[in-house]
Image 1 (cartoon, rainbow, N blue to C red):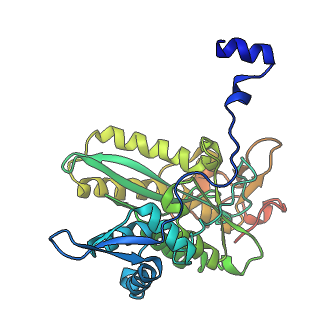
Image 2: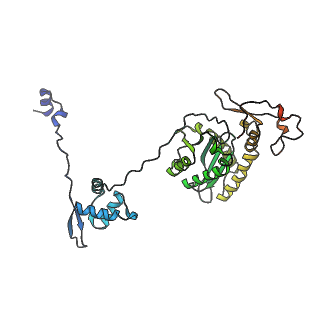
Image 3: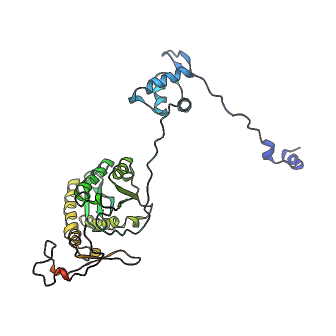
Length: 338
């Protein structure tokens, strides 16, 4: 009788008919011996597992050859052992010779999408932009660190590669030149550092350095550039400046252009969100109590200069002969200085 007809009459499925009990482990049993070639003539000897383990321990005893299972497989094969990485992994696991898996540092993600700091240096953002360099036929990396309240660029650098050590150097510069002079470490506030999930920012050494210096690093969620909106907006300004040049022949040409751009951005270019003041001048006026910060519902904070723009001298201070004395500036809780 045909199989399907017979199974149908008996009411048995094909799955049940072909099922085999899995009592005990299937496949080959563990091998307790390994072949080792002893000469070029093809002669070999059988090595038991205990002796093989002693060989592994001898190799790992030198810190320079403390291999994982893949490199250990190659080292044993070079000594004449006929062995594969699966067997080496099993034996090293049985005798606790495997490296402990290094846990990746955890990431803290931003809680609030809109950034609305109350003072300078409270929230700082960093990011990297790419620019093509003709002579090397590759991209250069431009790292920028920007203060969200004043829009001031605190640090920038350009190179053919940006490493995690260079990111740490950038923050060393920010701490020495900004956070320490303004005594931000002594204030009872949380200094938030926002960045995307770039591997250089997420590196263990970078996270550790920022944490040790009391800086709260947070990561933006994937595909949400608005959570890092200030640096993204800055990059659009930088991008337009780079596009006007078109192509940069060397890294030095790019660096020279960036020097002029960053100086103009910080000290000359008017910023609409800063009541049409350059970032550094706005910062100085805020310290002098000449800026009023107005909180708007469901919108970003609005800044207003408390004296007419024409009363400002070229240095950013109020003119001595101004017809409007400082005493007439209204006293508001939102006017503060660092």
